[in-house]
Image (cartoon, rainbow, N blue to C red):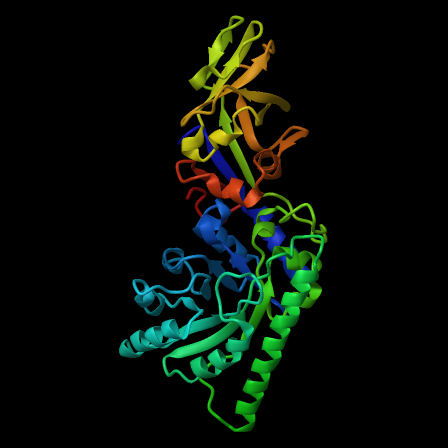
Length: 387
């Protein structure tokens, strides 16, 4: 196995999920968001962990993720992106919840499911202000009525997505909530009317949901029937503007080690482009990780690493397979010493937020950039520890 690896503390993820569940209360379900390889943490292992921690739904971005996951679990899997013509059959074959954002998709999926003699679970997406996918609220209720009457579709959910729940100013998020509540009320009236008319129902109880991490932290009126913790499941708050009303801890540590340490004379250059020159006699360590692993070249001149509890700067341009670390005149650091790029080392810590802040981005992107060339090692797991 490579020296460079990402260690994933599954117990931390489970603790984060349980704390979300405690915040929202026993009447509210938890959907574990495991899209994008579980934010870089590993799709299958994390899905198992959040399920063991009490999540009763899983959420992925694309059908391919749902297909890969279905081999390992029987619980419902919601695919957030709507089906395409090419993957409609996957929803039927692998029992995935399809997000419906147009009647054309609903009719096409109904036809394919009917031909297979099956029924497919679907959820309607409502665009309450995200400006991305979904029916506008004024069309959502009629879509609900029509889809409810399609023979081969089981309408199990209606949901939306908040655009600004992670900001201090919650006014727009509250407007979205009002819009969604109006849709919920109207659909509830439709369901009540059907019940009074003794019309047969082909669908189970409708699940209404809108709350992402920011809303879980700060908007208790958004919980409805289910919440969708994303980044907070992995131990990061979605921004510096939310409260920290749920105590969470990061699950991922990115580690490597020094494969060589050399002493450079004054005026010597380091790495491509000769962007860094030694000012005096300096020791430089080489670490076998680079932008080919997802440790982006954009961190050149900005990032540091931890060795033996101390912080050392990355010097020279980050390359595809290696980074160089300026050790100065510290002769205690030797070849083979462990290097922490994200995580804790003694009393020191470098978080995904630290790297994100240097790049003007968010921890989501930093974590998702760690690609599959980096082995994942799973800690605190009841299942095999490598993925």
